[in-house]
Image 1 (cartoon, rainbow, N blue to C red):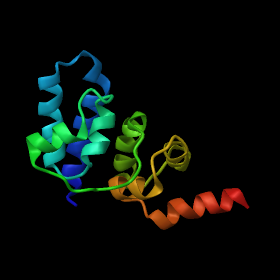
Image 2 (cartoon, one colour; image 1 turned 120 degrees about the horizontal axis):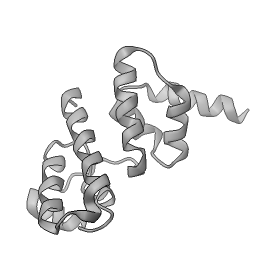
Image 3 (cartoon, one colour; image 1 turned 30 degrees about the vertical axis):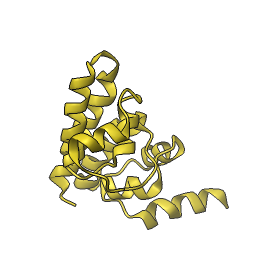
Image 4 (cartoon, rainbow, N blue to C red; image 1 turned 90 degrees about the vertical axis):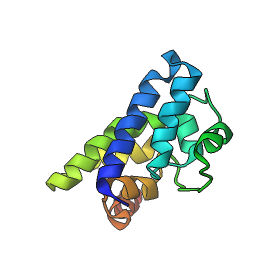
Amino acid sequence: MNKHDVVIAVAKSIQLYKNADTMEKAEILELAKEISELGIFSNRQIEKMAHNKITHLAIGKVTGKTSKSGGKLNPATLEMIRDLIFQFNSGKIDWNMVDQVVLLGTSQSLVSKLTGISKTQINRRFVEKSI
């Protein structure tokens, strides 16, 4: 997975999530298509970003994409995920933010996939906190 594509996909996803309520269906589909073509998010994840204003099936029709790139995503965490990507690249990770993203419902595996932070490191934090 290309880090540049991840950054672009996350930025476009934030745009979709923040603006879907005021966008026309055709605009939503166009932005959803752009996100989908980057191959970072599944059509179901994109559907959630669009506040369910379009279906994953509609996205699949315009993109021809049916792949499942798994992982639970809470679209409300996209801006924090963007920040974590840049933090990881700078070597200074806000671990409380990582915890918050996971606690808000984005899976550890998806956080790891998008940010580059080791899933083992993320998981270890939750195991240590539960002891």
